[in-house]
Image 1 (tube, rainbow, N blue to C red):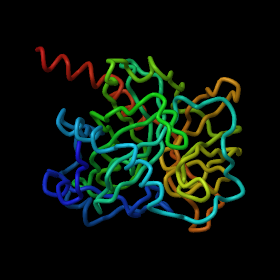
Image 2 (image 1 turned 180 degrees about the horizontal axis):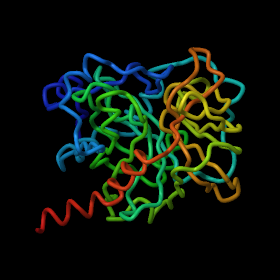
Image 3 (image 1 turned 60 degrees about the horizontal axis):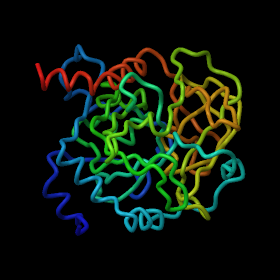
Image 4 (image 1 turned 90 degrees about the vertical axis):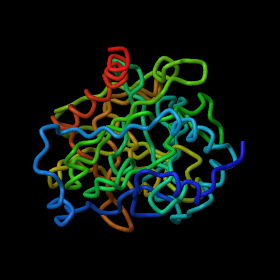
Length: 316
């Protein structure tokens, strides 16, 4: 099947998309609210959750678009410098639940984030950062051609690719750049297998006190890995200005990667307590992530029942 050109993508979009850095997807500093955009948004919505759906046609196009050649090329499209001393290649058991999230951003650039399969009612939920789905404080700027590849490593996709059918984010991220967390709902694979039936799912905790040792994972665009290998930072989580932070120097591409507490390196399982969201500087020493509270729980709950809701609507 012929590859889809950037011009074709732009012609067929019904919505614009956005991330700040072409070729990567990690905010380098905490974003403040865009007052002008927020002021133009509708008066406070009763629904604190926003659901971005992708049509069956869009999902088919996404799977066709991300060929092995395109996946290989995107990792060579950006070089964010040498991998820092805190981020180490993961050499333990295969992390089947963690993978690369590929998509096309607002500039028409192929790019990626990191995401994680989590336990859910529909067995199809994936956690990542909201800025991997849409630009904060800009409701119309969303990403397209989005697929999740669990267990990705050096060009290998051992469990295939899963098209994203719904991207659920907090309304507050859409209008005010707060609560940088998202839960995605993915289709079953070509054999009809649901995601966590195939790769398992991480536990997830809400309203958990900040603290303790955390392992943060991601696929940053730093060399020599350039997104081809899963890296890990380990540190003690501390509260900081309404979010939590750990010592970590992973950069662009690691956005959305999981923070796993109570991590067992033998099983590759832990409890997801946050996702990579922002860095402290252009030469990072610290990674920040949201404290998963009531808003994140509402996002996750909507996503884990989303497929069931859609099925009821179609047959109602």
